[in-house]
Length: 241
Image (cartoon, rainbow, N blue to C red; front, side):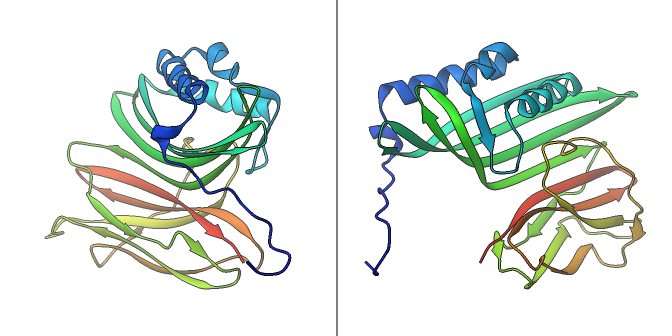
């Protein structure tokens, strides 16, 4: 151990978690699947803060808007590890979301995987941060199948590659697309916004980006459109020293 380093507890496997933690996560998952907003928010303390900068009120509004947009939505909440910090418990979880919505006669399918860390105090979550995040929205009879390559973490100011490769042969079909970089906020992640598309000569997007000069988090998205469907694939990029 280097001089001045702070000892940190080693995360324990999920099967050793306290019964109160596993029970809370199970009840939270069930409440989310019922879309019982009051029951879900009962697990979030009044002083709740998220590393992305939003509070309990903003989180509740975002969740209400998401559920209003979806015709169906399901949650699977998996405990990955846990550790005790005094009387508090820090849990790392993987939340898998599946949703469908109908709009103007068109069906949109959402899948998302969010790995996060949350601090429980007195049975409530008081702080939360996202470790990794991946979401995909598709529509159409045969939306493109996409292989995405993006580093999870880059240093401030560093260049990074972002590839979104369509797995099906393009043939004579027209492929339109655009890579989009956005700041991470509590609003707008699932909201549509206008995007100018360009015709892609190759079977996908191949871009080189540059990270901001300071520590940050960004959403990097690939928007790919064919005549038989489209896909929007988004991942979180962590900019860390």
